[in-house]
Amino acid sequence: MLARAKATSLGVSGFAFVREHPGDAALASATLTHGLLLHPVTTYGTLARGLGELARVLSPGGQALVAMPLRGSFPKLYDLLHEYTVRYGDDEFAVALERAQATRPTPEEFEVALESAGFEDITIAVDLAGLGFSSGAAFTGDPLARLVLMAELASWFTEPSTFTSAYAFAQDAIVRYFTGVPCRLTFNIGAASARRIGSLRTQCPSTFTIHSTSTASQPTAPKPVSTMVSESSRQRVVVGTRSRSGKSTRSM
Image (tube, rainbow, N blue to C red; front, side):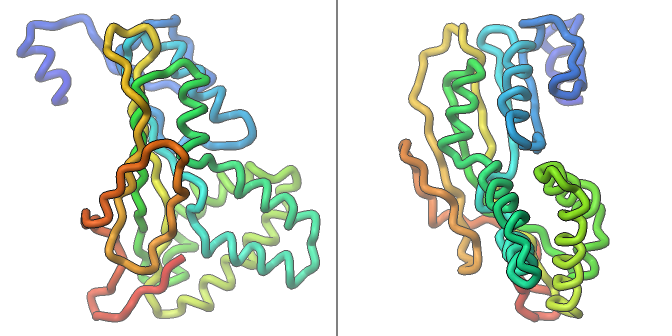
């Protein structure tokens, strides 16, 4: 609505918002000025294909905004899945789990993927964030866990039935560990802004910004080799750090 109002005030007409799934877009190349890609599923090779499709439909100089969880997200959930492999001696699943964890890109890999897809003027910000739940049962029953997180994790494994057993073990553990206790799902969100190569803009080096919080239990963001601007004094609101009753929240 804001974009439409601005366009009207400038006398611009003949534009439209288009919603497509990466890889299924029936758009002609170089037809869009802006593209938004949220939480692409990062199975092997799909991130590169999604970014490549985004670059294809953007006109030279077009802006891409991409946001997704980076490596190091959901650490406690992975700990519980590792606990499953130890308890049941499932070495094959342990190897698959390590591969799955490495599927999420680091900030450096995120930058490389954007550059390889044909982008420049790349800026990446990493936010250490969290979502709060009133209990473990509230988390496992939430649509975010059932329809987003579990579906993405399951897509990383060649044997879905094995993952289903491991995830059921993790769900049961979460419900028991967080009975009547608020819990927080922590993750590293990488938000990137980039321009399609071919613009007349002056190129600038890629930069990273880490937005940290004062909460000691926040996950540690991967430190990129590229220039990183630390803003440790900046305060970010993390949902679920403390419950309304004053009880401390356990991190996931």
